[in-house]
Length: 296
Image (cartoon, rainbow, N blue to C red; front, side, top):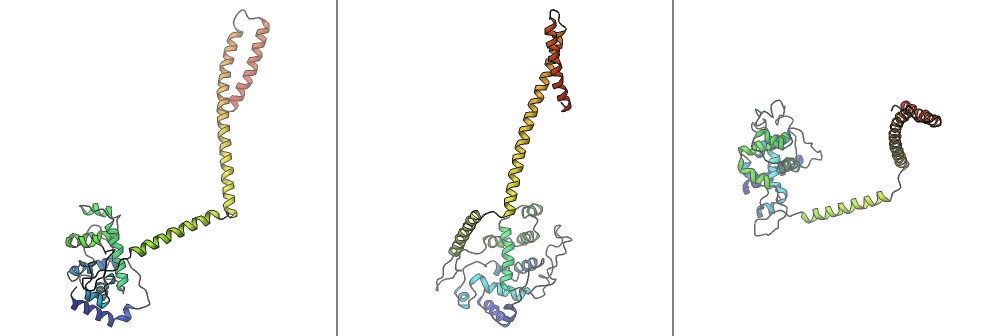
């Protein structure tokens, strides 16, 4: 970004400082990402947008706008709310995925500050960077989970492929400051690492407390009911197996009755044996009747 342009952005930001420091927070609406991307990929800003994330110059550092590329985003903030034929219309409106979507980038334009605009871009960009690239429109639309804003970004990159590297790279995570060289942003990796460590320790401490806590009455009742149901299930299973075993025994009894009847009709059997056989048949028939009542 040229120094003259940078100074112009700073002056504009100062003149409109009441707008930029307003306590009223704006909310991202459906059309906001599309208007923002129309602006970022426009001929007016594409070249500057390609340098976002590069090492900051000493003039930017001295002006106090190096962090988070504030100078660039302040300029975007100034232009974002202005009516413009390129920013106000939905690019690629004839694309099959945008037909009948009713997305209107020129409708209800929000006065987002530079931080909000940068946040909106970061959200879309992060989703894009984890999306597998496809060769065809429908293929990429499926890869991005049907997110129209991510697909819209991809469409812009088809027109300006030179920005692919900048979009994929995102912002640097670590850098150093030297007064006589181009200055890059101060990294946050140590702070993030410390925060992650504290978060892990907090989660572990919470888990230990939960394990040490006595269950409330409703949880105790639920656990008791679960144990009762499990015991009942086991008893039912044992009864089913015992029942199946009895069925097999009853089937064997039927075969024994048939054998005994055949023996009664055989010659050479005395009266006492015949009486014993008939008594056995009678007893077995009772067992068989019981099996029939049970449905076997």
